[in-house]
Image (cartoon, rainbow, N blue to C red; front, top):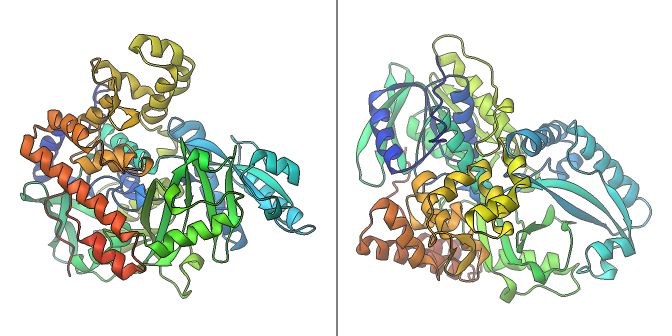
Amino acid sequence: MVMRQQHPATAGRLGPLERSQSWERLGAETFDLVIIGGGVVGVGSALDAATRGLRVALVEARDLASGTSSRSSKLFHGGLRYLEQLEFGLVREALRERELMLTRLAPHLVKPVAFLYPLTHRGWERPYTAAGLLMYDTMGGARSVPGQKHLTKAGALRLVPALKPSALVGGIRYYDAQADDARHTMMVGRTAAHYGAVVRTSTQVVGFLREADRVSGVRVRDVEDGRETSIRAHAVINATGVWTDELQRLSGSRGRFRVRASKGVHIVVPRDRIVSESGLILRTEKSVLFVIPWRNHWIVGTTDTDWNLDLAHPAATRSDIDYILDHVNEVLATPLTHDDIEGVYAGLRPLLAGESESTSKLSREHAVARVAPGLVAIAGGKYTTYRVMGADAVDAASVDLPGRIQPSITDKVPLIGADGYHALVNQADQLATRYGLHPYRVRHLLDRYGSLVHEVLESANAELLKPVPGAPDYLQVEVVYAASHEGALHLEDVLTRRTRISIEYPHRGVECALPVARLIAAVHGWDDAMVDHEVSVYTARVDAERASQAEPDDQAADAVRSSAPEARPEIIEPVS
């Protein structure tokens, strides 16, 4: 088996031409592995398999990271609270992964972030917390972030002036890491494509192929045009997260574990509403609450509640938002209000079902099972440990593959854009002069594209180097590049995942929907009617989300959110 790395000029491009070619390949070739699911675990599995020299295809019914992997807390972290739950192995594994991302695999995407842990009790709390943080600082091996720093009450208030003086008696600052989850997932997918994987979105599995008692591939439908084809493979990996059980039923195989969906809601507020030089981690009666720096904003969350409704449209409710506001306002001198909120998003964690009735108590360990000859399922885990999960899934599938497969090497394979990134950061001023941009704009682009920045900018004319109307943090060329290289097929893909306009601006992307759709149209050949359709579908989705956030409970919010039209023409939910 030979690794099929693309020519460097294409760098894992997922454009219209590649999409057309990939459909032909899916029906014509026999693959070693077919991976179902374009979340971080799916693309991580695809990258792992491709870099072992396997022939791999990944199919996703919607968009890369369209589910859980674009709706996380956007942290690469060990999970400080899991130490109290004695999940030492999980924390150690996650911290090692954080270190790899920061130093070797994705320094352009994953960045250190500081948090203040406010102390509320004198005496026992400081040594107890310090011991936990010392363990946290050392469990991951070599450390690329600073260690904990103890602060007096006055020192903590200087770091975070937004806190009520009565809310703490001191504090400890520590570091973790963060990333744009949707962008990171997409870049993992592009890296897999760079090493030869077929990565295709809007491609839904509608059935499983069988030879005697073994799974021998899948039947797929192109969601955009309704075509169907069969993909033959030696093994299939179900990496569909909260859809794991549904795909198990579709396959006709009995699952080895059950997945329980836990809803997590976050709100996004302007940076000036919380005066602070650091993020915050706060204890609640159920779990923890983060206040996370996010460019010119703060992300505040999360909730942790059962979700048994539409898996495609987890909806935030008024009570979810009130829960977050009530808990963060307990420590803020100037309370946040509903009027301060610029964005809201809800996601579902695919937790392994257990005996506990509380989702916050369920393990974040992952499970892998060969549920039938030729079919492997993987679920659970944390975003941070996606690389380990992918390797485990491929290992489990190896018994169905012909010949001996090579060991996983993804701990040595940087994501595209990582090579040369640090040198380019040092050359930001020169790059700014070359392209006629402000240096801050170049640094922003480097932290989104890394060394692919030249590919992004060299094809841009003067007009495309102007900001997106209504969303000045982004350039128009980024929209075009999302459609031409990053697999964005619809307006929602660009506004919600390739950029984060949908949560970073009070208009939620509506004000820039038309100009962005026109930019995408130039790549995909949309006519005026298609542009209007994309804008109307996106606007209806935003309206439904806003309406759901005023509803009192999950059932009412789900009914509103699920009524919004889909960006993709038709998604058929899996049935047994």
